[in-house]
Amino acid sequence: MSTTTPAVHADVAVIGSGLGAVAAALAAARAGRRVVLAARFDRLGGQATTQLVPALDEHPHVETGGVSASYRAFRDLIRARYDGVANPGGGWVSRVCCEPSAAEAAIEELLAPQVDAGRLTVLRGLVPVAARREDGRLASVRLRRGDGAATDLVADVFCDATEAGDLLPLAGAPWVVGSEGRDAYGEPLALPGGPQPGAVQSCTVGFVVEHDEEADARPVTGPAPEGYELWRDAQPFTLEIAGWDDRKHRYRMFEHGPDGHLPFWTYRRLREGAVLGGRDAALINWAGNDYADRSSIDHPQEAYDQAKALSAAFLHWLRTECPRDDGRGRGYPGLTLAPEVAGTADGYAEEPYLRESRRLRTASPVRQQDLEPVPGLARAANRPDSGGLAMYHMDLHSRIGRPASAYAPTAPFQVPLSALVAREPGNLLAAAKNLAATQVAASAYRVHQGEWAVGEAAGALAAQSCDRSLAPAEIVGDRRELTRLQARLTGDGVPIAWTLDVPPGDPRFTAVQLLAAAGALRGRRAAELDVRPQESADAEERQALHEAAARLLGEPESVFADLDPTTWHMSWGDLAVALVQRALDQAAPTAGGARV
Image 1 (cartoon, one colour):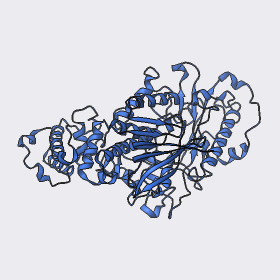
Image 2: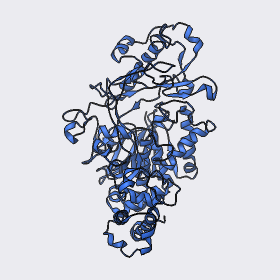
Image 3: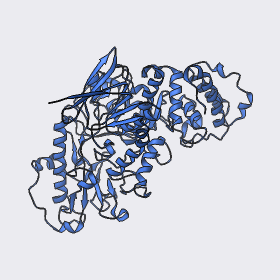
Image 4: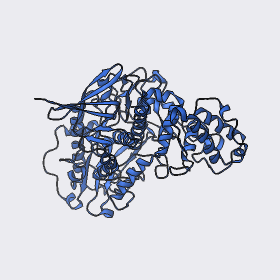
């Protein structure tokens, strides 16, 4: 018999277990709000833990810039678990490949100060099952445990950081899933024609294996998994994979492939035994076990069960039929599941790795064209309402009924705050893969660092909504409120514009970030990711800086007409600081002001 426990109250409620949920809760709590994080699983981290993808998918600039201070702290804490080893797994897909337990521990350490201060409460084992609205706002969300017990979470602002955007339909928010179709926005990677909501990307139930080389000499005992031959032939199982250039890339298990590609085994290796001691442990997340028969959105349990069965079949193939590197014989019987590394009873992921979520539906979602390289410029099209940064190629795996993958490069891009705000209810924010982006564009935000950036922006916006007693849309739509929020974000080490040579901690960071996001970059500074703040600004660049500073207030440039003429001889970065300080002083009566 189900029971209902007393309601839980918060300023900001974050629903979800993944990296977006962690980042949103952290951002809202460090802003001083009372936050409740309602997680589905005991382990926080999503992609990095329960979904078994702790080989972090990131952009090429991650070691030097383009990420927030909190995400960098997450990476640093993972490395600290291994006494500073930069890449504990030595996997070649990422600069940080680690065991799920290390990612989990890093997350818990990041959140601990907020929990200890009483600003953050983490509730685990809860699934959202219903929502109540009042006067166009989301008043509460009902959460249910596995034993049937339910509780209502009441908050001023809600962040949906679930893996599949589960809160959107419960709250009555407009949403979309699958392909919008090429007719909608003219995106080359969208499926031809009109909407195809069933064309959801594949999901994967990854698994972790160790390798005992001596056991390779022993035959595999026991029957093949049910349906093995069908899976093997339909996928098909192979170490070849289609490249972005439509050519087959050929791999070998432990040696370089005939095309020179690095070994399959080290692709997502999570533990490098030669460095850390013990055996290697590797994650298997490959085209061979991508499941694209049923939608993980429409049929979540069936998709998980079938994807897990597919992975079991792929493991059997690796152990029995995979061509050996020496060309003599088939299969590597020494590959065995590693539950202790996976953190699960059987070595398989606790939940599927979802490449797609329900997404907020708005009139102007982020599109493929918004993320593509712009000739002569180093960045994608600028978003003045930026709340963070991300970068990953648009990477569409097979879609239900459409087996072909699709790919397009991106330029360094931003997280527009307007893409996080639901039209209704007015106090609901997207905080993970469910931002207002098309299927094509969302495929570039879905990875670890992108999801973190979306969640962090949503958490900061939620906190300011509470601080100012304004709906999130009012903050994003009011230039002074938006400037105040962006100043808060940059003050917390969150970059909102790509300026790699002015990192968090630089005294010019906030000023450069605010003006760059407001459109101040011209000439060489627009053509490169380094803005050279120490160099002088010519007349055109000074004009661009003045215009951008005026935009921070939503007012004409004349508010800066009386600026001391000596500023004309300042460096570009020092002039940015002077202008932004003036702008924030002007904004102080209504937006609270901030020093830079």
